[in-house]
Image 1 (cartoon, helix red, strand yellow):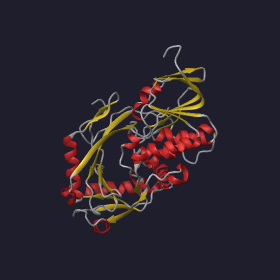
Image 2: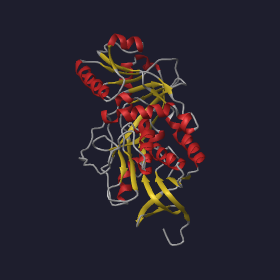
Image 3: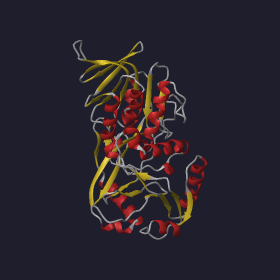
Image 4: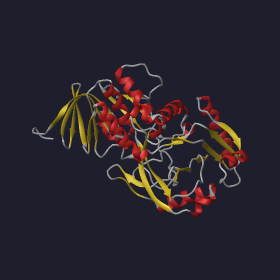
Length: 386
């Protein structure tokens, strides 16, 4: 930026990143009377927040995040109350199935752990699972069942938050790319491709791009990312009644209100931080569909309408970063949560409460904690660096 750069304004708090994490942090701050600026290089909710399957399941979250996932579930189910717009949330039961003794033992451990942390799950027989989900293939050994599950139209994330933020008086700078941030003795200079903004505090909420963003302030997170692939089929009469998963984690299935079936499970495509998620991996699509057909045999008769990709940011310990940037006054970070769309409203509201000095109803996750930077194993063929 040069000396004649346009001045975009002076703000109390600037949030960089317009996904669910950034938006759900900015909203309560604006409602509390602060002058808030939200910067997003594209439109709101167009990266991972709008490219996920919209699953709300608390029972597949890490034990440390079960309570946060339950709160996120409650918030999405009541979206019209706090956003002013319904994001299309639907309650459905959740079902995770196991097909052999090893998977059954692992599922038993998962249920015991999650229930100890507040999840409402029960173990049921394969016969009972088939009664709940009649199109299941034979051979289910054990299943986990929960009434607290569902899905929502995550592709509407940007739309609903744009409405709510404008109603709250926040300044939303869409299609405004933040190039770097300078900490000028506690007054932050946000240098963008449209000019410079100034803010007393800053929140970094850039998802997969957080490692580079926190380095602006002399701090770095060991952010990794997955290039998750999703598949959607043509419309069909009711085929899948539940939010369905397999214990090995390589399959999720749910049927949308319009009759399409959304298939995922962490299978990987190709992408990078410069270009985003950019290339579907055909072999991973085929294997994902084969597993879906094994679990629900009638899926073999359906045509695939489209596939898409999104960059999911995670830290090596699979816990998010939510809190103050170490040794930098007035700077905060939020992101890197597995299943982050479902939990995002809870984490954002917690960070806003933290910034406002309010009592926290749930713990947050110190970005400065010791994190061993070990790589994760991806389900498909591509991940960070591809």
